[in-house]
Image (tube, rainbow, N blue to C red):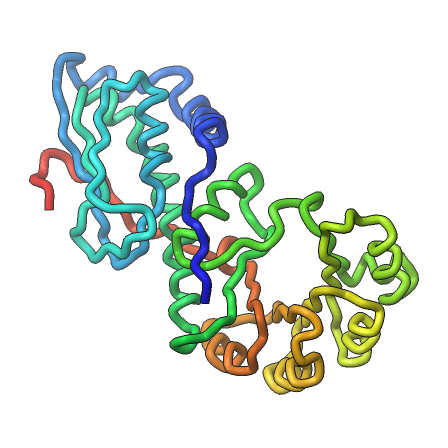
Length: 289
């Protein structure tokens, strides 16, 4: 199975999203920190895992403290995509205590959320049989405004991304089929309209729809809520003449069986919309582990 690139979003995207989060939390200052902590106190804190997880978010933590003035040094102790066990340190924060405390919640919110998505994605990838060529992919079911971050976290977990947005690929779904007047009508209209560089993917709900979409020349067939036996039957029938993607009703328990059918892609919105935040904490004044 090919491995996705886990490069983070561009600095412009990182800073835009982080800036909005900081404006939400600290635009009017930090009343508690300003009241309790003298301005000249130095701090040293560790971002530690409190459960087994796949870490993601170092560039975001760095962006938080860069936008707060750059006085806090962020020292990496783990790489994005690295598995961490409880007690392992992801990064150290060294600098003015006030600045560390002001950025703590925003940094943790991002790191916990993104590491949660990466950990969830890794669970799905790890469920693939050894040597499988099937890809695990996300969907557009992301948190509004955080898609670039969550798609990056999916890659850090070893899974792949589906289309970036509505303009990046043709994906004909059931409502498009209904509005266009049928499977063939929708596919032929897309073939006439889309750039020659764009593949045509069509969602199919039944064996009969699959046959119609294949005959109409769809490049990719999204097998929506097909059971394992029907996926296997479809793989045997199509014989590589279209890319096959299984989606709908995907669970961890189904991943090995679906991959064994030879389906090309298994996509699941659960990689993002159902990924729980992991437990990362900021421990003050401890020694690095």
